[in-house]
Length: 610
Image (cartoon, rainbow, N blue to C red):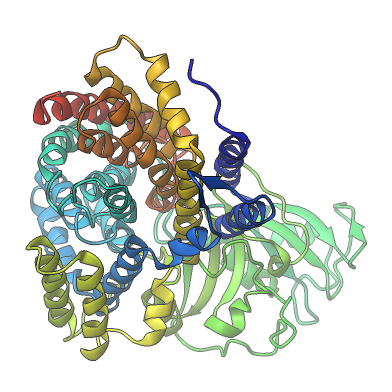
């Protein structure tokens, strides 16, 4: 068994374990966990200086992640991808796919999987999933096909496709960049496309032919189909039918269909649900039902069904104006959304977006009690808000790109600037693929061209940058620096080689990939990739073989985030839109993981002659 590293190395390994634990806690914002870990590293090495071979490990090395070339490339590509989204450049393709579904649904599903996978090799898959979700649900409704058999295969296909190029995901860029920083030969944009294409063909075939049969029929959860059951507050006013009426009279008005959980009279007084109790102005009814039924009950009782927590827009003051064309829409709270880990009050939702929040649905709980006003509930990823507003305001929220709107009624924008955005994206890819300039430089040029061509504004640039992604990359790079310089990575590599001693190199390679695969389904794939890359290179050096297949084993492993909804952001989006349960991801994700793992375990040794 290899000897333990020095105290600094042991402390770094323990801090890495703490970091991985914090990254799995959904209640703690990812950026908060990252800041805590980064501060701990910097302060720890400042108070307890460390030298290796006489060279001090300076604090500036832990901050170097903010200027890391891979982070610059990731940020620039996020911005360029935002340009495609804001101009609706991919909308014609979505429309063409929609027509194909009407003619030959089974072949259209295959085309959808293949096209979305290919696109994900060059564009972040989140906007692709956002673009396709409403379209696919609408198609499923028209063709009488269960949406649950379509949405998850599409989402997982984009993850497979994103593995195929060095710019497909931010994780790919990080892994490739770190390997080069550690002295390994550069890995080109398409250097590992062949094994991904071969393994991905098996994965796509599984998602096309088998996955829809493994998935149970789930009720589609968009607003124009079988809707979610929302928790809502209904307020009794002076003009309400309910004012002065008994509970039995109010329930009779709704033909006893309305279910009242609680009746609140003051901040501290709850009234018993007796048939003879009479309602007074200001009473709050805690109800739970579908959006359509809630709006019907609002009309029947003359009550108000919107949040009154914001002082400047209390119920009944005419906000928003009683305009024609009021619509309901459902907004999914995702990681990186302005509402994530915020309350509606603190985010000033109504004032900022001119939409009234009516109710909330907690996707990952069978039941959820709402205590107090909707405006005081701290939102988390996966929550769904039912909002009301004009078509224009709902469109503005949808096209803004900050939140996922699942109304399924409005097309994505398509402007005359879309060809410009596509041309700029193509130039970015060609410049990097031909070696004319590094991807960080070509992507940065793409940002400038997008702005000059008016494909986006500076506000779009700010919206495109995700603080959680930036901070998780920086802190992961800092952990990687600490692991490498204190000998922690070398110790883990030696420990792994010691545990699998006597095994052939292909099996050791396969085992490393499996470890990374398990890790990526519980923590950020960026964190898993940054920490795993130096370990993979150290293992290759211990075995005396070329490091590239081990780097790719890490890269492929951390991209296999198929088996849990928290493994990747698009999994959460698909879960919310399709009404899936956690077990549904296991049904499809585990077999898909096994297929991809076995395929890569065979292909890498063959291609690299191990």
